[in-house]
Amino acid sequence: MASGLRRVFGKEEFVAVDDVSLSVEPSQVHALLGPNGAGKTTTVRMCATLLTPTTGEIQVDGMDAVRHPEAARARLGLVLGGELGFYPRATARDNLLFFADLQGLARRRRRQAVDEALERVGLADVATRKAGAFSRGMLQRLHLARALLGSPPLLLLDEPTTGLDPDVALQVRNLIRELAADGTGVLLTSHSMPEVEELADTISVIGAGRIVTRGAVSDVAAYAGIAMTSVFSLPAQLADAAARVQEQLGDVAVVVQRPASGRWAVTVYWAADDSHADRETHDTALAGALAEIGADAPADLVTRPASLEEAYLALADRLAR
Image (cartoon, rainbow, N blue to C red; front, top):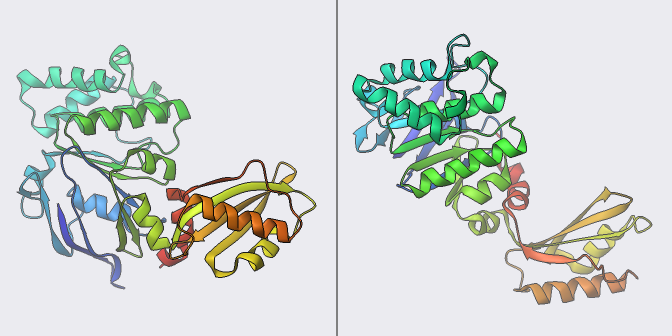
């Protein structure tokens, strides 16, 4: 889809994106993850033909998007979200009919396409309500409906659930999953690690304009240098527990603690190259370290593979410009 993308801004020649390549296959959700200013939105806007890359190539459904942006645009749907983008005094249906005209949908087909899109996002029963009366969640679903006009093979979703209530965000995630199951390719950006972990088949992590690692959650965790984590709580009087457990475990783990409901919430990040290879040996090593400092084995101890959020936080310092 995209190969060697580079985008430079201004007289200062700020390099926002540098040599980014990625692909999105049919039925695949490919997540682009990184901190603010890393280049995520710039990458999405280039893929959407809203920005021309300084160098690099973009293919959308076999179409050269740099040379033929209008033709490529007809093959993709874009959701940037937010409060803007619709005429507030026009109904939801009339807004989508207008955008269907802009997309060049045949007049005999456009009303059916609009009604199908509204039905797909759960807005068919409010199709005649003015967009200005919509809540943020309803507007976000209307953005999705607009993106679905013409059934494009590729969707570009930039923070599609930001600011939504949990129930509406769940509806949007379910819709994304359904669209991918039906064969649509999805490029997704999000700051919600659980959302990315739930939806993405492939994760690309971008930092300072460059892709630093790509793969499944386990690949991101391995790049971050952690394999598994242990989480548990300790009594409030053990204020120095993390430092003392760290001394016992040495370089095989990093131990952190934070206050939580009158106790200490402790997380142990086990190194990816640690010789302790499984949950049982991690638990045994941890039990021994706790016994050495005079702490009882915690009843709420859980050892599991590192989550995407834990892996991302472990490598966050490497993503800054």
